[in-house]
Image (cartoon, rainbow, N blue to C red):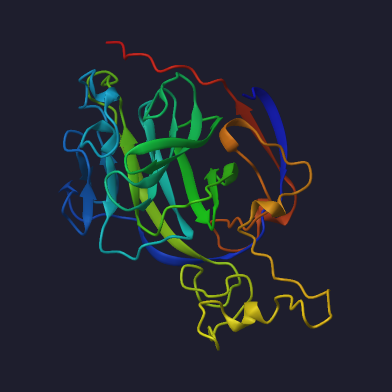
Length: 337
């Protein structure tokens, strides 16, 4: 286990982001569950809208046994809100603007394929969902939930000062990246990534009401997008040759690999050893020299890591320095009342 300060140089590559859907205001006033395709997973912490923002109280689950419950049980860990009936995204991501009035978890879900299978990216200053529990530290984390089993894909200490933040998470092939306020803070590999799914919001309080049931998790924007690595107008989820532009998607031998990729593959019988297979930036093999493996598989690489603007800019214009302060995991403790 690594502790202390690790300084990494980032040089994210560029790939286009293609909008799947977005929403910056919400219908009317009252419950969101069942309205405009929105569906939630936990009845006690209901999701509401004031006509502009979506929010969850994330405080009513004040029975101390809730923190023992896992994903897919219909209890506190299932306090997500997804929008069904919208395009599903595999290689792509979701970005949300949020305001957190409490110290518990607020975040987003993507690749949501049911109540017990999805990715969860979030921030917390106290109570985090399984497999973390109670840690009393400010951090960003990424969790994979597969058939109810939760695995930490990364977590880092972070400055969560202030109420408002922008959280973004995406999958590019096997590579997963999380940004906080425009800075990439987690990047790791999932060798068997979840398939395309729905996206939405997440909020979690694992047992204590924070005082008077008066604190809420607010969202005022969400944007969901696909990746188009070669910028040919065909998103990676549908592209038969992700790394070489081939808008026509021609596939003469009908093997599922576009002719543009097969034409660049080395033929061992042609006597020319210089042919090369175009590399897909999904691979962590493209990591920049000097990268360091840190806690729970966390890694920063130069793979295709898009910025919210969809263009190269900010950190993508040069080497950015990210301060990742890692803390030791502490065993979950029962909530105090």
